[in-house]
Length: 388
View: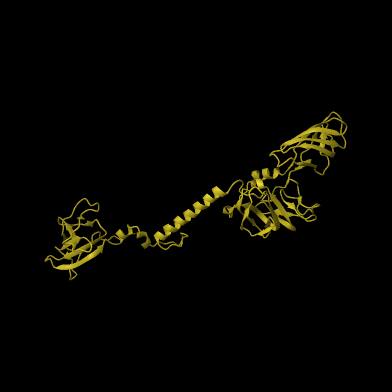
């Protein structure tokens, strides 16, 4: 509820009684108002001039016998008040119009407090709060500008940062048989005989890289130079180009130059990104798997014609998306990789390739086949690697 107050000020005589039939003079600040009067008005808009002196009725300013407000056009003024006998009651050479007019001044907001318990601001007056909000806006604008000017390409340059893409079918904990053997896509175990383990987590997989490390080479094509940072969930540690980096630490990468990220220990939700992006995890599966397929793919079902009792020739293959370079094709261990039109499954003993980054053809030698028959090479019979 709002308290109702008298809208008109009351003037009093020296003895404290309401000043009746008194005189009020308003003049230039610092001077006698009776000698240097200034304009006063009966309305706030200043359209109805009031003749001086203003007379009082039972202490109230009066206009034509009725109580009325009156106004001056300046904040500071001089004032003289006299009783009905023209005896001085009070005088002030430099008075002002009060708190509400002060609030209308440029510095007025600095004198107003507010309840900031839930605002999240540290300011204790309205002007400081406005300044703080403006600073926050400018900081946000600067971050947006930094993102638009410094960020280029993918948000997360670390492929398979959720550790869920497993084109090679690597089994968690399987011991590697060669140095730098690839496991989950784009992650190679550095030391032969060590292994990578992974298990489902709240988002993607949680991996544990061995003591000898697992690493990913970031292709220079995606590195535009400037500042970067890595972030992840977990207790693991990293090296960037052989130098230890803390979680969230800013470091520089040379434009269009490969960079190696070395992981040891436990990780989830790994990101290599611009420092401005730290604090938000970006993951796009379709983009991520397309990036992984740039380096490693397996075949879909392809067909060729047997021209001898064992050779199956002219199996065309296309890579989508195109691979980084012309890949190396390798038979994936397993049996029953081909079958002929009579649906007799065959094993493949060897393969020849003629490949580019966008595709090519394959020739196979089957352990058993029949001349002049169409043969299908089953999906995932061949792996194509264009790893760095």
